[in-house]
Image (cartoon, rainbow, N blue to C red; front, side, top):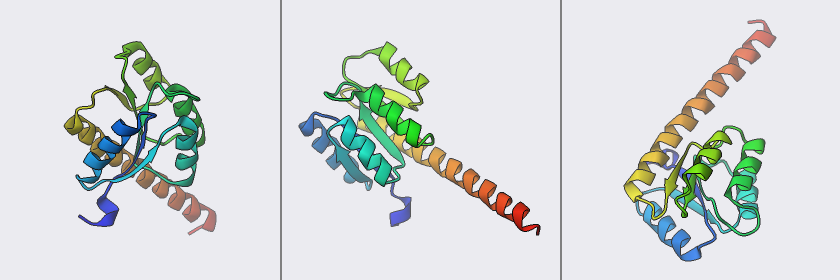
Length: 146
């Protein structure tokens, strides 16, 4: 597997043990994983780096998952985000999807389900970026008058 094919994932959770375990399990499957333990840290990381997917815990101290989701989506509307919810709060998960999350998963996370979501998000992101590139190329061609 070449470097380009590896999905870049940002895991965001204030439970450090959970975060480290999940990061190790994803890295063992060939993913490039970064971690953040707070919403503020996640927003800063997302500003610096383009991720194929951000996996975001809903309940965190400071700015919670919904607020973090809003802030990242404001800056990067094409960001692919999956929400993790521990409380089994379906209503909050639905609210997160209305705010632009791709999906939500309940903890404890089923690793194969998460890997499937990561793969779908990476494919979708590639399509979005390709379509953006095509539009930019068309715009250049029109302005050059070729």
